[in-house]
Amino acid sequence: MLRPLYLDSARIGQLAPSARQALYEFLNFVGIAPTHPCLIDWLRTGEVAGNDAKRLPAWPGIKAFEQSIAGLFGAPINSRVFISSRSLTLIRLGLQELFKRCRRCMTVDTCWPRYLQELHRASAEKSDSVFVKCFRRPVYDRGVSVEEFCENLCLTYCSEGCDGLFLPAVDHLGTRIPVAQIVRTIQSFGGEIRFVLIDAAQALGHIPLGDDCEVADFLVAGTHKWLGSYSTLGLGIAPQTANSAAIESGIQHALRSTFTDDGLLAFVEQLRASANIQSETVNLCPLISAFGALKSISPPTRATVSAQLHNAQQTIRIAQQVGWDAQLPDAEMRSGILLLQLPKRQQQLPSIQLQQVFANQLVFLTAYDRGLIRLSLPSEPMSYEALVQLEQALTASSRLASQKHALTTG
Image (cartoon, rainbow, N blue to C red; front, side, top):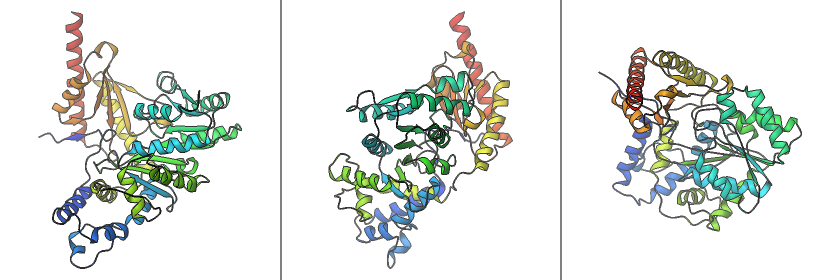
């Protein structure tokens, strides 16, 4: 009997058992007394007296939770952490801080499209203040090395008069962008860097981020992908850099001036008693779910990424045997996300139909048009049964694509 093979954490991760348990206990409590007077103190300190302590899930208090988040990022434990209902809120605030300091910002063409829109919107008051560097074509089509790419980007950055960076640590196609190496290369060439903003949505819980935290002013991620909390929660972190205090002041000013109306961000800032900010009634379930998920995950290491890359090699070998091609960047830019594509003559199959073929085999992944699929590989070794199941799904989809090609050309 087939078991579900979930390979879609780059879109939304499976709910971790510890997150499910924390939510269960919390909802049981608030289902009876949603305005219980003990809740605010419990959220602030993690402490509650009497029988209530037995009915609420274990929770360390907001400060300890934020320290756990900092540890997962690989940042200094006392780095300033911000929690919001949406990652987009924190991206907007990060871009606001960037353009307070920078004349021109460089990004890449594999930046998440929604965030790229926000970048252009945030720069509207400054003409010609965004430069988008072509990344996908040289990396995938020409196979440039990581050193070549960093040097080429650095030369462009300096010649275009840029002084800020907005980059994904891992883009939505799974390519690791060596942000720390890029920053250090620019600095070695004498380039000016006033602010570095990193989109870590595909990186948190997936790859180590310690090097990025050393060079970034602000990183933004979410909890619903590799972390396994299912609920969407925005996480922002300002590692201990020269801009940290100014970022905190800028975000609190944005809350007071209603530049942002994220209720959870305001609530948590009020909970921390770090600012006189008015909040509103908010959904606390994503916060509890994220805390529960942290119990099931350890900060990623080179070993966990190596295990994912080993699974990728096994998958590539199977895929090539049944007619699929792997889309691979330079070895140093690979992550636990793998792209496979059907040959050009078989790319007419619509993405929804392609995804359904895999779902029929209980294999869950992301499918795109032009015969492209994205697999989020686990850090544990894939079993023989899972590899056979994946091979059967790849074979079935390749066969269906061939049949469609025959019908359209015959």
